[in-house]
Image (tube, rainbow, N blue to C red):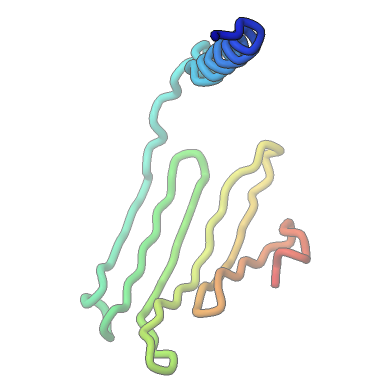
Length: 124
């Protein structure tokens, strides 16, 4: 025999879950105006194989809002594996108007950023 008492709570839970998930899936921030694209002031890229050495590359760019990034990289043999090692920097203007510059390197041990504004624990 069908039990109405167990049907109502499970139906209510199903309908509530559906309504909540529908509301969270709705588009957010519809009232924000779209911003115009930020112009790239300069851009350079040297592909692997065009620089001295196999696998060496470099790139950099600068945008009109003060973002800059540069990196160089190469393929390095570590033991029996080829590993991409890179070093570079990036900078941006913070909300406080200050220019933040981060230098970094990346190798088989991971990504290693360095900058005065990065907390010491993250600079390992």
